[in-house]
Length: 203
Image 1 (cartoon, rainbow, N blue to C red):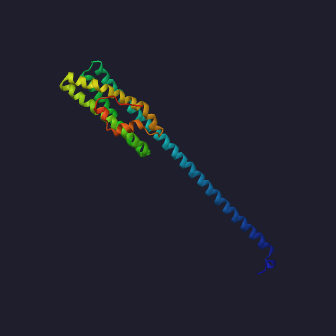
Image 2: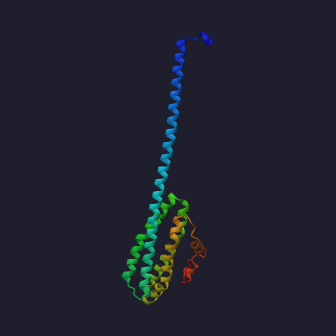
């Protein structure tokens, strides 16, 4: 059929149909673009929420590390002054029994949100356990022989203050994603400085 044979009314219908099709396609494209923008907004919102959650979890872990270091320093400081009682030891044990589970739980939550950050925190958790174990052994010695236990606790004051310094100097580096090279070197020695009752070097 020639175009000339098409009634003029048909052109109107064809134009209306094309206009309707263009409108439908335009609406579809606009809706798809809108959905894409909404997905991107949702993705960014989720990312922001995860970062906020990670920040809150890391802050809690850092505070628990600081609390553990404070308890260690406090007990061994009293020992260094020649002032030690079973009550002080019992208080220390109660504090650490409350802090360490929170510390481990917080570390697990951090790992769930950021695996790499959690792996870095593993070293600090191991060190906290190591220092606490040494203090615990000295506390048990104190229960059997006050003089011997006191001397062991005195010797561990340097270790406790070293741990506090490591937390103070390196925790911020962990949070910012910088590898704590000092602690990595310390881990390589498998706590040789601590076991030898010498000062842990922190640069």
